Length: 213
Image (cartoon, rainbow, N blue to C red):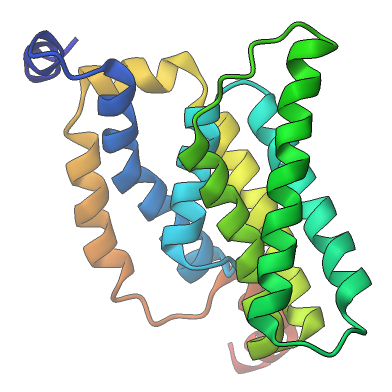
């Protein structure tokens, strides 16, 4: 373990906190690569990054289950109340409120039926609920079809990054070479200046690119 990390741990900083803070620059860089280089359509960087961190904070497969519950029930609730003539903010309030109660029931079931400790941190769950609110906001701005595509790609990307960060080897490497996080920031400076076509655009317009090449 790197001496700097070791000294930070000795001061009382939890290893999980250090790991997450070192991960943030790397997750941010992966999001930039996904959007600017590959051309994956994702939500705002903050939403995606903190959704991954939320899943890490919740831990195990239950974070994925809670994410699935939020997605499924938010979709169902909004579909059911869509014909009702009311303000967007009221529909959002109804959706968030019902989802909160459903999550309470889910946590109760974990304990009462399966005997699983349901003491999960609340703030990561709230961030995951915020993710679903982004779908509705984007539906208004971009339309249902484009918003749904963004939603699906974001969820897949979040889950992939989450599983990558759960490998013990990643934590070992970061604690041994914490300067990787600084290198990620330097890479952001380079990626921020890229003006060439994204990979998805090259594939989409391959015939045009081939003719011009």
